[in-house]
Image (cartoon, rainbow, N blue to C red; front, side):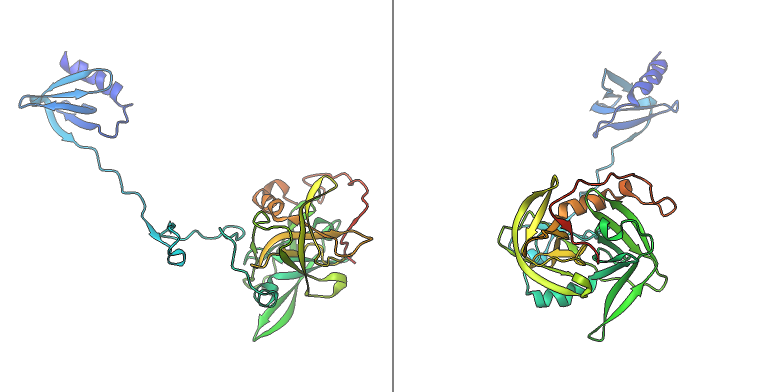
Length: 329
């Protein structure tokens, strides 16, 4: 009777997941898992959840205690953050598809930043015109505007590699469209030339931390004038145009700047320049970086097929505007 009862009990206690449960091996190859309430010389009382069993000692072969849980991963102080009370993981997180610092980078001069990050700003050429772009990782992925490559499949990218203190222009012609979104005017490309090196890339920041009136600068190829740097201030972060919100800046934006980066004074990209007001000066606009990171994080949803340029979406023409994109000329 006891043997039959113990066997049925075993079926029930298999579902128990108590952290303090012990396993009692019996002579008839059965097992009981539960919490031991009391141990006497001739018997053991075990709580199996729905009842308490009293098991004779002469029926027990072995009692297995639960293993102690593994200690939690330790953290060590970050020496660069000494005094701020923060702790960082012992192993630093590796950047993902793009790099985005956890906190703003220290501010520097435009001159120093252009020397540091200028190599990651590129010129995008098509048979119909040219625009700008910027590399987001060492594998040659880069961002530009959709209207820069709209209707084009033959694309080349000119990169200025810094060698021996000099900038040497290199043209890459094996460029693939990875993803695009006409409504946000964004496109993701990749350089796939066999001789392509590991590329220098920019870091993506946040416009949320910026205040109106703070200095910003752009790098691009306005009117084909390569590697042109323009500086200004952030005029507003919430300019509504065509149902979308844009960053407005006094940094000069002209045809050819399209797809280029707008930087803060830490050297982080905070927007993608894409248009200006046709009848005014110092009225440039950029797509906020938040829209860019959303596009990158969901790039599979905007995937482009070279075999079928109409895939995955058929877009409607946007309504007419009182301004035009910094069109590629």
